[in-house]
Amino acid sequence: MCTIGNSFWNAEGLLFNTVFKQCDLVDKTTFLDPVKQTSKSGIDYVAFTRQKGDITPAWAGVNQYGVCFVAADSYLKKNEKGLWKKKENGPTVFDMYLKIITDFKTAREATEMAKEFYKNVGYSDDMTDILMIADSHEILFIETLNKDVRIVKRTNGHFVSTNHCRMFYGTAPYDQNHSTFLRLNRAEALLNKRDDNTGIGDLLRDSYYGKTVWSICRYASVTDADLETAKSTDEDMFYTQACVMFTIKPNGDNLPVVACEFVTNGNAKDKEGFIWYPFEKGEPSKELYIGYNENLWA
Image 1 (cartoon, rainbow, N blue to C red):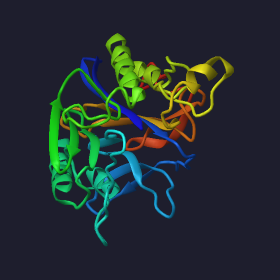
Image 2 (image 1 turned 30 degrees about the vertical axis):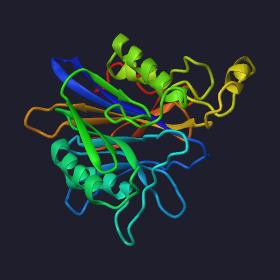
Image 3 (image 1 turned 180 degrees about the vertical axis):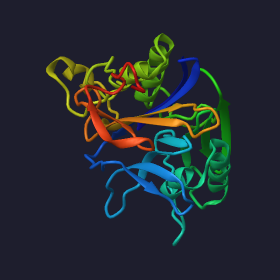
Image 4 (image 1 turned 120 degrees about the horizontal axis):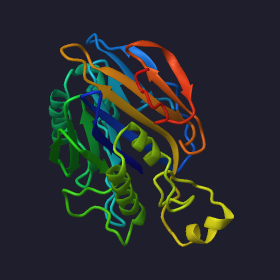
């Protein structure tokens, strides 16, 4: 269960695009340090990965062209569950995610690939997924259910998603999953107040509903003050274990400048973050918290 989204915002006479993801899981997971790599297509990219058995699936990523992705599970009504059925020796949804940043130079081209994957790769009838693909110019927000694919394109403003499809009927209703609706409403309210990368940093640290599953910055354990609130929910105790922000700065006819701000193996409220310009210079450097750097390009 995650919160994902983006915001186009103005600075220096340019329209920046910041794409973000809050990664929430039930089981404690090891998140790996991001590393810049070069794909077989000759594209430099950074995949944010986590350890899952003997594989390291990418949960977010960006490449030198500013093409990036974030994704979120979409939950169905109670007692209904969509599961990926991996074809023998066939690609997984995580393989598809990785191709977005290893093989494509525009969000539009990557979206066509993702669309074909959802339509043609074998999975159960009730499979559902939420994916956002972006570059410096646009975002394409994708929802899929039962091999039907619906896409929203945005070139300004902000867009947020949590864990229920809005373009399909049949996914988790409010009376079965408060958290996805509460987090969505709170995230939209925060971005209406401030929509630049600092505002997104504030969003990723927000625990408006206390240290509970209902907040954007989520906790599995609770303080005494929040104990009664936490006991009143029967939702699974997802908690935030990592987050990332990709800020893409247009650069005329040249490749965009990409800044990555991230926290791994912790949440942004309680742990300092890192800022990194992977296609420009050096290694990640610490910052007090993500979104803190008022002059992002200093």
